[in-house]
Image (tube, rainbow, N blue to C red; front, top):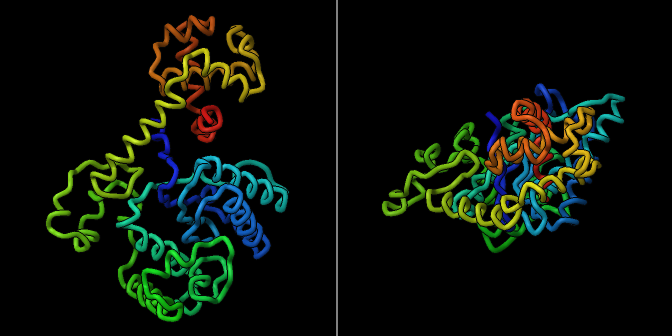
Length: 333
């Protein structure tokens, strides 16, 4: 079964993570860490995306972002494509660097902001990259050292985190360090990886008063938050989809796939078995039938192929999109 589409909207908090393919290293030396951090900073500035926490580990990375007018998918595509190209040239290799697509969770900011900042910044310690908070403070590939004043970083949002711990910088840093120390005692936090509050009731329940704990059980694996927040995010996303991609006619979708594939609409409706045309037609068929819920007979007639051919296209299209889930974003952008 294909994964659910990502949720995205301007101004929402997102916890983003990605791993190396087969859990292999994506950062092998300081030069690679530095290149990724430099690209991250450049794209944050260019796209007006805010970064509150980040951690680079040898085989994965975590980011806590708040998106602006630029969709998260666009931002992550630029970042990961740029770094993968650099890494492959550096190691004289080819092929995929990252395992599947990146993961992202929309998070209820009021409830989870500080929890996620701490969770991400403790990741190098929990992964065994550093042994304690002092070593973590000196670890240059994590936002903790920036918050503690060890490093300067123009693209990391520092004030918005420290303001929770005091009005003076020294007081705020001491408060944040104590907050981190308390987090170490909690151990790993699987409750901070989506699914609404149904997975995190025990941890977060103490943070809510009795009235707030009486939340509805609505949940979604792509969202970390209370039932009302989950509902609001889903409703807002539906409105955006209706405004954009889901209102496309089959003709409109065909034109977008043609542009994406550098083919013409005539090519896609010609019934040709040429490899590049067949691949684009498979993607078009999958998006039309699985995402837009069109009938296979309608798609078959429009593309001048048989219904059995469309059935094969759906299998091929699903495989292509699973291997590169950014395709849908690229076509609908």
